[in-house]
Image 1 (cartoon, one colour):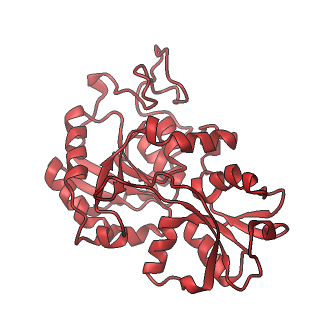
Image 2 (cartoon, helix red, strand yellow):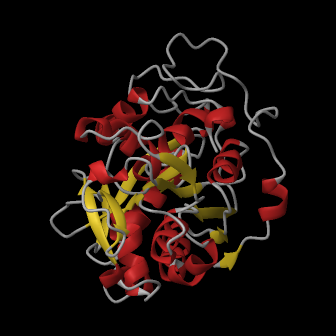
Length: 323
């Protein structure tokens, strides 16, 4: 497995550029999908293109969501990517993606074949890039998920959501589920309205939100539980310095996707690699505590709550809304 050097080339591309594959001009059913895709079977993801447009690359490019410093993950993912190489018979490159938009652009352009997209950007990847979610990290019993946790410092004087009025609260990025869209949809029901009752400041990432709370740069921040748990494991902050003001019900975690236009035989090998990989005793298993394997999911069923939250926020899946 090699770290991909495609970053510069991919980063310069734009979602608005000409697509790499023929548009589905004769499509009569596509839902929210971009014009270059079709959804005749109603599963809310792009249908496979005609056989002569399917691809079987010699090298698979893999990327993991930029929810934290992407450089951290090159070594962590190495055991799995070696397994992916063995099962598929392909060389595999790790693409250290720097932003959600760059990751979506890379898959849309055909330069990214397998990718982990974080919860909120997953519908953008599905609708703009032809990503097909098929797996999540889960436990032995098949459970998966994370929660929105809203943190403040223990000495902030903020003891309830009502105390956030007039405060400065860090959201992560506009497309983030737990870092922005979920609090905008859920907190009004708890009596506090983002931007109306408190000032929203975008930090750029979950780890920056949390570190900003610890440093006193922000009064509070909604973040993904799985991210702050990993940060605590790496001693990036002391849990004794913060407290939780609010916690949601569980959401699905990062989705793992293949590009819609891969050959069916390759897709089956990719799935086989994910579902036969045992995380126990690997760097991946150590990093993601509480999960032991990849479990199967579908976008239509398992992202229903996320689409509902995004709809409540007026989100539409366009390049301009992917930040």
